[in-house]
Length: 209
Image 1 (tube, rainbow, N blue to C red):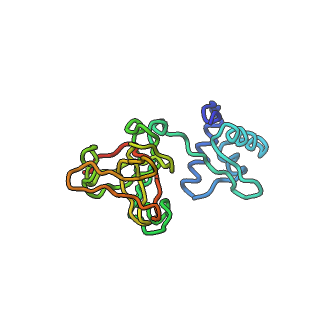
Image 2 (tube, rainbow, N blue to C red):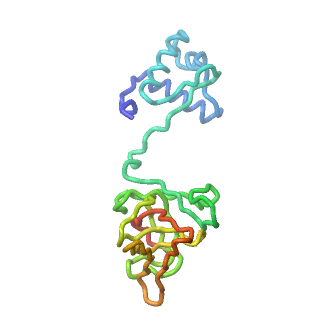
Image 3 (tube, helix red, strand yellow):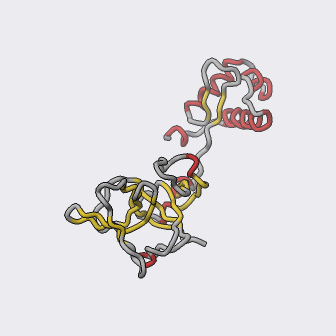
């Protein structure tokens, strides 16, 4: 990433701007000859020198052995350091991998500052079983993906093979219970013979609308 901060010369800036314009207009990069002709650079070797310098500075890449092989590198967004793009995971079918592409409803860009752990994905809360912890129906809960959790932590867990739930983990003397925090909801007692897995830790939430 250091190369992205290196300054480019005025001539290199012109070369980069021309390449970007041609890619946006034609859907493909110009040749070295076309760059030289447009910018009044007398030799292909001089154009190549500028292009190689831009590559070294992280502004573009050159794919070997291909015509029109210049590819632009996306310039860093100053907001990227402060935000995350998280997949929102939809309903999970029995036995289906959590991160199946078909389960990603959409992706949301959110501020890192909202979370105490680094989240890996979002899931939509259905029901009010964790209302006492401030987790309400329709909220988007951020989950830090891990299979390791301690007694007392709020976890995302898969039980009975196909049920994905957010509950507080009670784990004492090899007995595992998933505890709700709202009147009228019963704990889930995990049968050792059942398909059970910790999918992650609660990392924060986005309030549903």
